[in-house]
Amino acid sequence: MFFEGRKQAAAGTGVEPSDDELMKRLQQGDTAALGLLYERHRGIVNAVVQRQGSRLSAADAEDTCHEVFLTLLDVCHRFRPGDTLRGWLCGMALKKARRMNDRRRSRAGLLARFFRPAEVAPVSPAPAEAKHDAQSLLEQLPVHLREVAVLTHVEHLSPDEVAAALGISLKTVANRLSQARRAARDVLGREA
Amino acid sequence: MATPHDPLQAYLDQALGPEDRSGFEAHLLSCRDCSSLVDADRRLSQAVRQGAERLLEPPPAAEVQRLMRKVAQRSAPSRRVKAVGWALAGACACAAAAIAWQWSRPPQLLPIFTVAANGDERPLSGDGQGPAEGWSGVLRVGGDRLGVAPRTSLQLVQHDRAGVRLKLARGAVAAAVSKKQLGQVFEVEAGRYTVSVVGTRFRVRSDGDVLNVDVAEGRVRVGSRSGDTWEVNAGQSLQVEASQGRLGNWAGADFPELSASPPPPGEDAGAAPTTQAPEAAAPPVALSIPPDAIARWRHAPAAGKCHEVVAEIRRALRVHPAQREGWRELADCLRVLGEHAQAAAAYRDVIAHAAPADAEGARLFLAELLQDRLGDPAGAERELRAFLQRSQPPLLEASTRVKLARALLSQGKSAPARAELRRVIQRFPSSPPALEALDLLKRAP
Image (cartoon, rainbow over all chains, first blue to last red; front, side):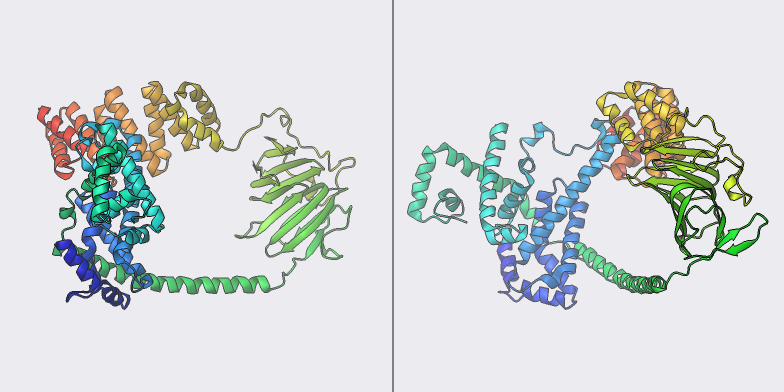
């Protein structure tokens, strides 16, 4: 499977260099390594960004992915062999998506000041279509629960990787996942 | 993540053995709570992974190239930024060294001269800290002249290149202050108050708790230890008592203390005549509209209290017409109250004088009033075109162009209106204004 192939490449089991090797090259100033890392990990970063930053345009999503990898370029010297790069990248992607959501909200506030509410783009979908929209289920979860659910399910990140991405303990990951499940059940119960 | 205390999590992680798994599945048939949680987890996973294969696809080569171009662009200016940073750091270090050298030098005191009635000047003898207690007459310190009234207790705390500071314990001192360089000060400390010279010619009288400041030329600022400040302009006089300042008129020609001839018999420093009469009757005047009042006005439209604050805003603007925030709040309130013509006039005033951000908002409101309320689509078109001259966020621009098209249609200018609508549909195809534009385009002649 495609995901499995990428996981093996990240671990360095195939002919492709491992993440650790590429990060070492990046730390030495070889920016070509960033391109290889982008090809390898852009998928999961894109998925996290799209799931967390609700309803981004393709251009916004690409810009956010680029920002994540440009940030990686700035902080690559902090990486130590053995760290989970996917966790790092997912953590950065979550932060960027959060910031993107904040920017969109503040812009919506500005627009609401100048225009009648009907003219402002709806931030969340209308209730009728929300019922059939899987993204709306995620949007109705609190942000801290949504983050854990996205990271856990999007490419089956391990609890260690989720904890590293969010900077929280394993126990908190388990608690939040359980809360996310209960919150999702409540949302689905309301919609039924 | 599975723990012995959380078999549900272990089941979802597929970490249970075959027997435990069968047992838990049997439990699920009878436990609605657990089965609903398993279902919720499945739906959550579906929601996250819906279309994930598309999101997880490897990036196209063009996207990677765009990233690498950004990397190249970032590294080039970063060298420039570093160079500028080093240059700035060097400049700061030089400035810090110059300041330290300047501060390390002992201050060179300006000599103090006494001025006789015929203009003769003599160095003041003593310890260099000013005249002795009870001395009266005229002094010259650098380019500044000080007239000290009889029975005045005055101390020169500082008289060097950085400026002149006086401490007035009792009595009166008048000053003719020369033009100051940047950073130079001339201050008179009288009890709890400090009078700083912004302009030139003034007099300070202190009687313990009461402070009187008369200004003949220029402007002075009076500050108290409690943080209150007053600015006194030429021809004005300020009396401060118990932190309450009262501004009045001062119509005197000059201060008798500054003439070297002896003061007329019987004139007392504490009772020096200030020819203004209405000082006591003058009502207290605030120097600007208080920020809390502006904040209250700003929330009035949302709170439905416009009719209560409009009169108050108008009163404040009569005293402080230059304070543009007040005009904006007045315009908003008038618009909400339905006083469309007056609101339009207030918005025009904001556009003419306010900061660009406020002016742009005012243009949109004005255009809406002109188009929908005052029947002036040409005026609305003018304001909207002016608004669009500056770069705007996409949705704002799209919505404004639709409004512009409406204004053009109202004037019978069908062709340019259709062009604007087509532009909105082409440039912002998925935005709500595009749908409105499509609808308008269908109905446009």
